Image 1 (cartoon, rainbow, N blue to C red):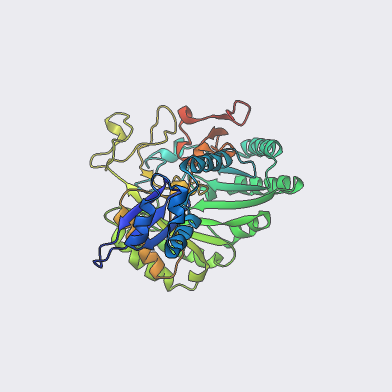
Image 2: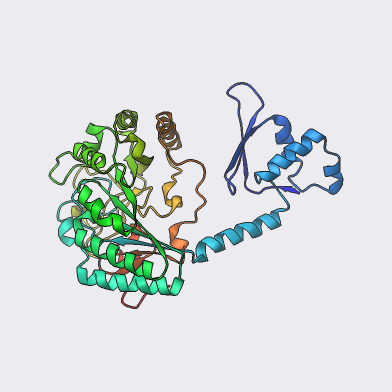
Length: 415
């Protein structure tokens, strides 16, 4: 027997005691133990000989059994490594689920200054929008993947831009791929990542028969803060309209709320949480999770002096629309696919993340916790992102950057 290579320990000194917080990052087990149990775990660091085990007291054997049950003690680190390798192989190669994110458009009706998909100005005129002809080719390509993979479940996520700006394509793909999945005995679920402004009961009515699971909607702090961070292109606020739209569809499908905070907005989130907790739709919110916007980490992609207006904050540059039009938005911690928990974990601004997680829990809302096992969606063989023009990408954050494309639905895909 040997202690796990994934053990993490933190002494708990706040109360002047000798307790130790233990966490295993492979099993996600978390325990608070006394100094005696921590010392027992140390005895297994290099492995324990049989005579060591027989010399344990009854209490020590009970403690060892508990540590073994939660993965803090393993048969050997060699066997543990084999289990880790098997886990990643299954995640990478597993064919039980097909995951596809479709960006119906890169156009958006908001002007968020931290967006990963571009500046404002003439951006919408250059941003792609999927046509119904392209949607038919996308559907045929997905059907080919269903036939090749033969999964038991299929998760279709609509993203953008703002996906509700292209409802005809959404409705077409939902109906056709639902029929295709049903014919193949595959369970299909639909998720939509939207800013919520155009979300209506009619949208739910149209998607509900085709496996609608739910919507992920962003609220960036209380009313005033959200309206500052996520205005319309004309500068108008969006908070009240989004809240009204949530109220109109609550209870019909899952609704998760996300938020992106920076140093100027983090203190507004308790007020947002109080507001949401007081709403009649609060019991219908499936989860809330807030992530930091990472600013001033590295220079944005440069395209000459005109690429950044005077006084514009520096952001991480990502996802050009074309070689001649780079985007100068930020990197958000959640790339947006909603498919991989690994994208939803950020190791920056830990104090603020912990603060908001605690505030969310205090009000009775479910939120993300623990350690996401990953791996990143980019490593999954049967997870794809399809851009509005049919290009294939390993991640929604790369959409529009031709250098990051892995192929095209018309036949040049790199599987």
